[in-house]
Image 1 (tube, rainbow, N blue to C red):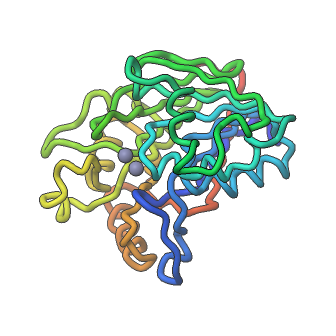
Image 2 (cartoon, rainbow, N blue to C red):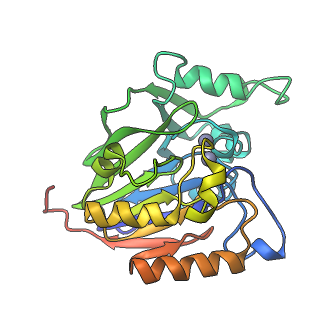
Amino acid sequence: MDDDVFLVRFWGVRGSISVSGPEFSRYGGNTICIEMRCGKHTLLFDAGSGIRPAGWALRASGVNDFDLLFTHCHYDHIIGLPSFAPIYDRSVKVTLWSGHLAGRMTTRQMVDEFMRPPWFPVKMDVCKASLDCRDFVSGDVLRPREGVVVRTGSLFHPGGCIGYRVEWGGRVVAVITDTEHEPDKLDQAVLDLIEDADLVIYDCTYTEEEMERRRGNGHSTWQQGVKLCEAAGARGLALIHHDPTRTDEELDEIEKLAKDRFAGAFAARDGQTLKFPVSLHKKR
Ligand SMILES: [Zn+2]
Ligand SMILES: [Zn+2]
């Protein structure tokens, strides 16, 4: 793996529930999972169904020590965890992080609660990997690996959700998977996380036209993503958390409209990889 590249790979870009069928084949149907490689360090964000192929790829590339950070634990962000092969491998070490339930449930409790009968045939203790569960509070600055800084903030979403800002090698990538915006207002917490970012991965579940009847669902629009990126001086905007009804053709159309408004915008697809060259001598 390149030591001087900040790599982002989308393993799952669908929101709410996974989908399959020819009309979804190009953008993909897996729910949220994003991989970041900061040189030799690997971070995964969320364990939606996209984490299943991510697990195979990590194994194939010999990665056996990495971090998994949860934005929150709605099903579309955790459903893939029991099918994530590395957690059954005794040679693997995973550090799991969450902060959206701070004071209510630890990361360990969240995972135990999710993977147990009667919803799952066995308990977490079948996992042979070394699982190191860490808890944080929104606003904390995490340093999961040498040189990797992860800033955290609260998003506006039912039950809470954490936004992340990952800084490494002078590059910045922000993960804002699930958040609802107020009309004609820019969320300061989001602006802080995405300021001057090379890439903002943003909840574009709806369009502004759809938003009127979708208020309260906890999601946002590509139009809001563009406004936020422009205000924050961000350069790239990955539309993610696609509505499960959204077909490839509709996403093509949305991507075109978004690109016309903001040149760095694109609709993310399962399996898509972006590489940002870094200068390891430059400090932010
Ligand atoms: Zn979601
Ligand atoms: Zn959610």
